[in-house]
Length: 297
Image (cartoon, rainbow, N blue to C red; front, side):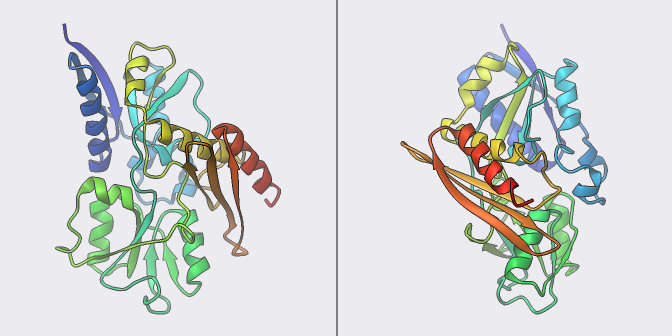
């Protein structure tokens, strides 16, 4: 007997690619399962011009989907982990994180590197973290807000509205774009200068606690990714913020320990505090790092 589950997703191409990846993994484990996609337009999708900070920051791409879960309109949802609020909504659970892709950011240009961009070059990003990190390396750059799907942002680069744009490497990989055909140069930015957003590169699967699908979804979980993102989310939860301050974290998981790299920036003063801590419990480590950096707010 076939079992049909409703899957909540945004309608962007990247969201659909990620949702199809989750559905394929679930069907491989449970061939009897069928999934029906339910497309949900979030606040972040409806308004593609206003900055994320002005829209409300953390959660603008997921809150409406979470409400659909709580209302029973869908059985589970697929998110980019970096879009998730740092604290889980009451009654919901993050049942799985798929194996994490690259956590790096990329600078896309018509040929230049970050170092060779001319003085006053215009670089597009909607992220305060990326804005801050760019000015740390190149204070002469002009940073302008840039939102929209990957195709829209690439077209603005091609049309030379921007000299460069910053995007996540993971999204570009999932799109399988041939940037060379578009005469676009991809500059992978080093983690020591461009620490990623919490959860960047990971796909999260969310459902109601104790729902019929919860246990099955856990079969998709990559434990190493789960520990890393749980550590980073615990760090972020201390601040109660997301897109409202420049904040970054990346947890590396090893057999005997977890190493967390974390950064807190101040866009006005262009000052930052960072740390590297080790521990074994991902949540405890993230909370400890958050409390340490919170002293500098």
